[in-house]
Length: 582
Image (cartoon, rainbow, N blue to C red):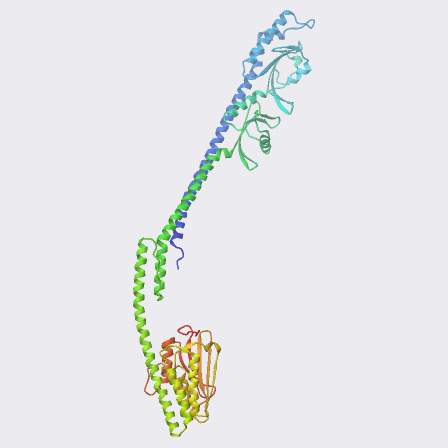
C-alpha cells in the first residue's frame, strides 16, 4: 500500500544527513594527512640538513688544518732539512718534537678523532703526533689525489670507512709528482665519528638514520636494523637519488617515509626513515573513534526511528487496517491497545465504536433472519395443505370403490407423511430423509397410477448433505400431476443428484409432453416475480426458499428433458448454509 513506511523514510533521512558529514570529514582528514606529511617531510629534511651541516663543518674544519700547518715556520724549516749522512742532528730532532706537539694540539682541538701526518719527500720521513718513520715516495704517491678520499676497511664482518685529505706544497692543478713537492700534509678520520653523530641524532627521536653512498656503502648507527636498512637501500637503488629526496617505500605491508639529503662536501647522503603508521597512528585512532561515533549515532538514530515507528507508525497502520476491514463489513475487527499513549486511547475508542456498530448490525441482521424464517414457515405451511387435499381426495375415491388395501396403504403412507411434516420445526433435514419422503409420495401415486415408474440416482457425497425440508416433493408432485396424469403415454420420473466444485444440483424429469419454449421462458421468469393468481405456489415457493436460504445464485431452473417432458433442476451453493450431516 505504501512504498516506504515512516521508519524507512527516517533512516534514509538520517543516512542522507550523515553522508555530507562523512564527506567533509574524509576531505578534512585527507587534507590534514597531506599537510602533516608535507610538514613532517620538511621537518625531517631540515633536521637532516642540520646534521649534514654539522658533518660538513667538522670535515671542512679538518680539511683546513693542512692549509694552516703548511705555513707553520717549524714545518717550513723541517722541509728545508737535507740529510748528509741519513741521521738527524739534535736540532732536527728538537724540531720534530715541536712539530709532533703541534700535531697533537691540532688533533685535540676537534671533537672528532682524527690523525695528522706530515711527509717530507726530501727526507722520505713521515711524522705523526707520536712517531716518525721512514716512508717511501711510492707509498706516499697514493695520497696525491684531490679532495676527500674514502677507503673501506673490513674487519670481522664489520665495514668501516677511512676519510682522508691531502695538501701538497707547492700546489699544482694536475696530479703532482711528490718528488717535486716540498711538503705533504695529510689529515684522516674514520667513520666512527659519523657513527657517533648518528647515535646522537637517533637519540633525538629519529628511527635509524644512516650515512649512505651509492658507490661506497653505508655507515650504520650502532643500534641499526641492518636487515631493514638494507631492504630500504635496495629500494633506493631503483631510482637515482636527488640532492633532496622524499620517498614512500613499502616493505612487508609497512609503509616508510624516507628522507635523504646529499652532502656537497663528501657526496654522501644522510638518510632517515619513519614508519608512516607511527606518524599517522593518532590520525587513524581519531578516524576510528569518529567512525565508531558515527556508527553509534546511526544505531541510536535507527533506534529512535524505530521507537517512533513503533509508537506512531504501527498504531496508525493498525487503525488504517482496522478501517479497511470495517469497510469490508468485517465488524469483528479489534485493535489491541498498547501502553497509555494517545494511540492507545484512539484504539480503545475505535474498538468501542466497532462494537456498537457490530451490535447494531447484528440486531438488524437478526431481525432480517427472523423475518426470513417467518416467511419460510409461511411458504412451507402453504405446501402442506396442498398435499393433504390430494391425499384425502384419493382416500375418498378408494373408499367409494371399496378398495380397502388402497385405503390402508394410503393411510399408512399418509401417517408417515404427517409424521415427517410435523417435525418441520427444523430448518434443515438430511437429503436421505427428504428422498425417503419423496419415495413415500411416489408409492402413493403408484397406487393411483399403475403406469407410474421412477428412478432415483444420487451421488454418495450428496446423500448426507442438509437441505430445507419439502424442497423436492413439490417438484415430484408437479411432475406427476402436470406431466404424467395428463398424458396416458407418460409414466417415468427420474430424480438425479450430483455436485461440482461449488454447487449442489438435484433434477426431476418426466417423460410427459413438456412445454413450449415461450411458455417455459415465461414460467422461468415468473419464479422471480411476486406470486400471481394464475401460478401455482409449489414451484414458486421452492425457488423463493432456495433464494432466501442460499443466495441469489441458487434457485429453480427449467429446461426441456431428454425424456421428452420437463426438467426441473435445483441448484444451491456449497459455501452458504450447506452443511454435511455427521
